[in-house]
Length: 229
Image 1 (tube, rainbow, N blue to C red):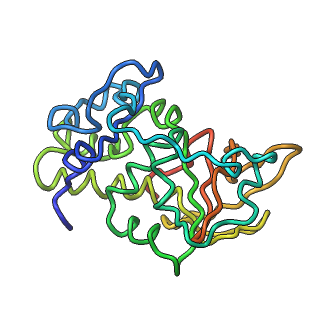
Image 2 (cartoon, helix red, strand yellow):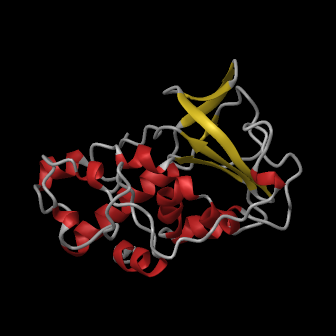
């Protein structure tokens, strides 16, 4: 596995994590903040996206009448990877997908469909720890669990687990159909009155943001379970 290189990639792309206040800007990950003590709550102090932000591409399809039926006739020439930069509400998660080469290839492929279950920025910022941190590793290895080459590889694997827990390897995805995420967990969704709920965990879908040639992007109000099995 390549050395963990999130800092360089995200500094280059300008993708930054969001604080609840959306006030301060700091890089996603650095040599100092990856070594924070597990007693702290680093994810509650994540910075806001702001550098090199692209303006969203606005069209009639960006303003669907039914928030759960966006783009009923998707453009087959557009892929999930093409539209992620325009989805400001999920810019943190979008940045994570670009840091994992195999997932980038998948979202750029017109032969493999996916349903991207992307948590909003505020949901990721509210996590008790950063997505690449694991309390079991802190318990076993101490506050330096993510230091050095081996620590970087652990952090990369943890981030991959987080992202893969939010991608279903199929689209379209029918109501009640039980499928596994790329991380191996079984999920399904139900419609309740005017809401779509991803199960288990009862995570509400804020909207289906886009339907494109290789799948759909769903915006979730919360994070799905991504804990180590």
